Structures are given as structure tokens and as C-alpha cells.
Image (cartoon, rainbow, N blue to C red; front, side, top):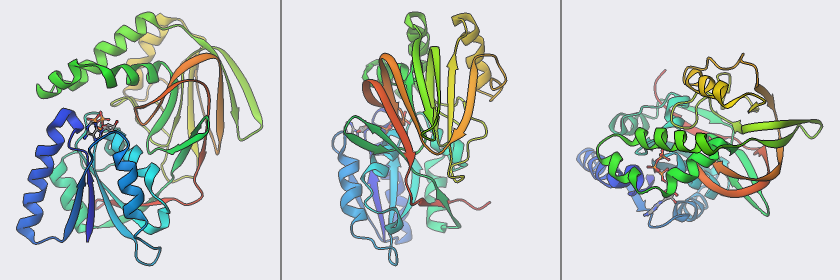
Length: 310
Ligand SMILES: Nc1ncnc2c1ncn2[C@@H]1O[C@H](COP(=O)(O)OP(=O)(O)OP(=O)(O)O)[C@@H](O)[C@H]1O
């Protein structure tokens, strides 16, 4: 039996129509499934908690997330024991960095067929971010500074819904990214990796911890990131002028920024960031508030995820 957690609000409400279409396919094939529509922020976490508690390592629950990257983050955070779950994902969001990085089908119908086929299972590291007294899991990335400021403004903008309807959702990101860029000022960020190597970057534009290659709707910030290597990939962009940043970012769409002056990329097993002033923080594109510090580790147990045929 498949258990689906569906965010009908994803892609500005188109998630509901996509889900209804997928349901009709499963009905026609006599597939046994149950589904739960999320009704509010944080609901996917509660549902994942309840459903995953019904699985065991010998008899895991097949838990399928239907939504955007933010719904993945909520579901991962709710899972009780990763050993008791087999995770599947059908994209109905607008960013789709998880699919892009993992090599999953972008088309929801193809993703459903791939899940029903269950051709291959792979293990994925689950990073965990600690913000104050709370911890959350994420699938793609968490960050502080410019990328988080863009995510936070996109979340509250009304234009996203309208442009998503016109299939121009990316334009919102671009417009907000340009606006935030104009008002951006750097901060001093101290990064401590593997609890020992500490370095302060006095003029940081942003810092991100990546489990995947892509974030921000297609920026290949950490081209060497592998979701199953037991390592976090960290990128810090600092000490360059705004003009250089402007050239750096388009290059990052193709992963061609890594050798530029001011771009620091390294791998570690745990990392913490402390800024000299509060900065916006995100986890998988969802707001982590305005914070001076956060840390990330990797959960001991990986997640089993359904993959398409090689
Ligand atoms: N019924 C609902 N009404 C309003 N918000 C919801 C509902 N269900 C879930 N959410 C919220 O939607 C957000 C996640 O959206 P999601 O990332 O899945 O889609 P998206 O924003 O369209 O895609 P992407 O992140 O890929 O751009 C989360 O903040 C989640 O809590």
C-alpha cells in the first residue's frame, strides 16, 4: 500500500489538479493507496510522523511526497525512523531542485510510473539543521544571507501565484533576486567545520550547506555534492564586489563559478555558522527566520529513496 502526502497548494494551487490526474491513473490501474492532503504549514510534518510510526525496519511504510521542495523538507522532518520508511517523490512544485539534483523525473506522471515500477532504491544522507532549540531535516540545502533573503521574500510575495498560473514562476525569483541584490550588504560569518577548523569570512554575501548539487531553482552551487557520500558540501561566497557577484551567479547556473576568487567550497561532516549580525536563514527554501547562527550535521541513518531505472 502506498501512502501519499500531497500539498495541494504547491505550484500556487496546481498541485491539486496534478494530484487528481495522478489519482485517476492509479484508480484505472487498481493500485492500492491512501492519501492525505496538507491543510496548513507544518501539516506534512505531522502526517509524516504519524504514517512513519506505522512502519518498522522489516515492514517499512512506502511514503510518497507530492509537492515542492518545501514539502520534502516538512516530510523528512516528520519521519520517526528513516529505517521504517521507503521514500518516493512526485514533483508538483516550482523550484524542483531535488529532482534536478537526484535525477528524478520532473514530469509528475513519469515520476508516478517510476515509483510504481520501484526499479531501484538508493540511500540518501539526511542533513539536520539546528536553529536555536529546534532541529529540522532537509533534503537539498540550508543557507544564510543572500539566497535565504530571496527565498523568504518569494514565500510572501503575491506575484508568485499570478505568474505561476502563467507558467512564469521563475520570473518572480529573478525579480526578487535582483531587488535583494540591490539592497544586499555583506556580513562577517565564522564557519566551523568538523568541530575544529574555524575560519572567519569578513565580507560574506551568502553561505550554504548542500546535500545536492542544485539550489535556488537551478543554481549548481556545489557541482561535486553527492547525496550519498556521508558529507556536506559547503559554499561561501565572500570578499568580492557586487559587480563580481553579478558575474559569478550566472556562471553558477552551469557550475562554472567554483574557481572564481571569493568562492570557497569544501566538504565536511558537520558545520556551524555564526554571523556578526542577524541574517535570513532558509532550509530547502522555507524560512528559518532571521538568525545569527545555525549548525548542520548528518543523521546516522540514511533514507531509502525510490529511483528510476538507470
Ligand atoms: N494547504 C496548504 N495551504 C497553504 N500552505 C500550505 C498548505 N500545505 C502546505 N503548505 C505550505 O506550502 C509550502 C511548501 O510548498 P512547496 O515547496 O511544496 O511548493 P512550492 O512552493 O510551489 O514549490 P517550490 O518550493 O519547489 O518552489 C510549505 O510552507 C507548506 O507548509
